[in-house]
Image (cartoon, rainbow, N blue to C red; front, side, top):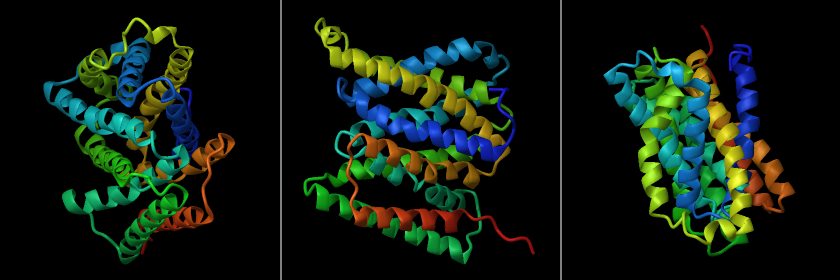
Length: 295
């Protein structure tokens, strides 16, 4: 990761490409795996890659830092991995990405509620527009599929809230931990429950690996684990260190463009109303995320 120049705009671009492509990989992985299996395998594969990449980075981690590595591991990776896997059984990959673009808005709200961040008038407007757009996006989805369960949309919003809280914890509680150590520590903390869930998911049944769809899905999850999780998480943790919390969260409103591209290629349909709702969300996020003008 040292080969990438320390430029926050470059990191924003690369993370948008990588994470924007993750949603279609999750969709492909769900063809042969259950959400529990997908989330667990993703975590296990990612941990394997990260141990190879940076096992030496964990030297010197304090007991208190391990506590926060565990907390941020669950908030930033464990819960969202399963939330997205369950949600994308019923929601288009591109819609999941668009809903996840609410993360900067949640980041602003978390900053106000827990870190005494002051909110400007335009940020209130941005938050309002973001939620209006979300309602519009959900309503537009019901016009395509009247049986679209609202609960699965809420799972995406829960994942976004987890990301928002996690960003502040990374910024304020793990400032002295290197990005590689931070990422590997996160995954070591969440590896045991992922293994337990996989053991109880019928993943190791004798007929499972005779299914070609399962093997194909595993190849997509391996790609997701290496690029979309292991590499991207190290990059993001470095990104958080070089940028503000809100700017770091802004990656979630550039990646929907990539996700829409892949979703369209895969035959997903988004109606005009949903496109308008997406524009409203992005305008809202932009207002909520715009830096304060210097006096």
